[in-house]
Amino acid sequence: MDFYYVDVVDYFRQLYKSAREHFGAAADSEYGPLGYGNPQKLLWLQIILCVHLSRDSLLSEEADALGVYFKCGLWSSVMQAADAEWALSTCNALSDDLETTGTSSAVRFVDQDRLLANKGYLIGKAMDREKPLTTVLLPAVTGEYRQVRLKQSRLTEESSDDVKATHTRYLQSANYFLLCARRALTSSLPANDLETVRAYTHDVLAKMTCTLLRLFVEDNVRTTIDSISISLVMSTLSNFEDAYVDVCIPDDLVPDIFNLVENLETASDYVDNYWVPRIEVEARTFKANVMRVKHKPSTT
Image (tube, rainbow, N blue to C red; front, side, top):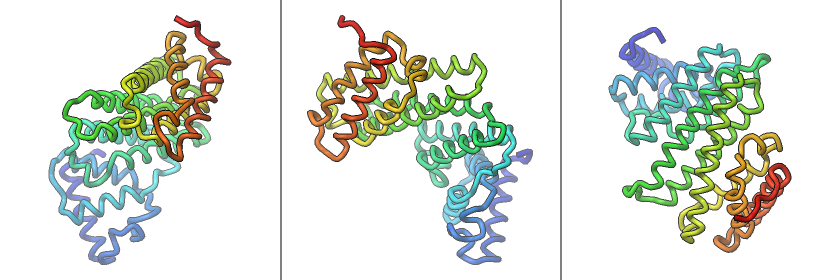
């Protein structure tokens, strides 16, 4: 990481050339010497970052190989705290760039879904250690909160050419944030960090509830929301522990939450597919949990 980014890109080119000379075309396959199980995930991430910084496009075959190496690499089980924090911050930065520009040089090496999976696995590694790396959690939650806000801003863009895909990405991002925040709120984070996570969670839940309710009012749910996305979000919400419901759902949001889940309890009214029974069950479960913890709101 102390090397100038141009030198890092040059190093990768030499590594790629050497691997091809020694192992042939199989060198850059998923089952090649740098494929599944290679422990150099940090190295590939650093190279992706340096390629991105240099704006120096790799050759097509080099770019394909780097994508394979990153996809198949492993996060070290003994990764130091500083390395884990750097890796997570770098993944977040690449995610932000992909979301805001859509033309990043990193697109060739890694996509949003893969970055999301890698961040989740990285957080898991950090928290499964004998002494969990809680310092990784706040940057993780902050990064996912930023992603939700970025995707939320796309919902109202007139240039959006696929409204359903835009809403799907938004709900997927909100769901991943909620999973990440839930892990953070059950950890030993300092009190100030926990308060930050709670504030982020309040905002995400309020905005998501408002967005979905508006679609019901406009009768646009069927054409705008993918059923799988609703089911994933409701599954996450229905599994909230009582303590999480208590701290993450502010009292002034409870009436809107009830309004939303009452719409979702009759999912067959707006969609007819495999996910309907699951959405209805998850909505009823979440409603019961909120009612038990927060009590039924008065009618206004």
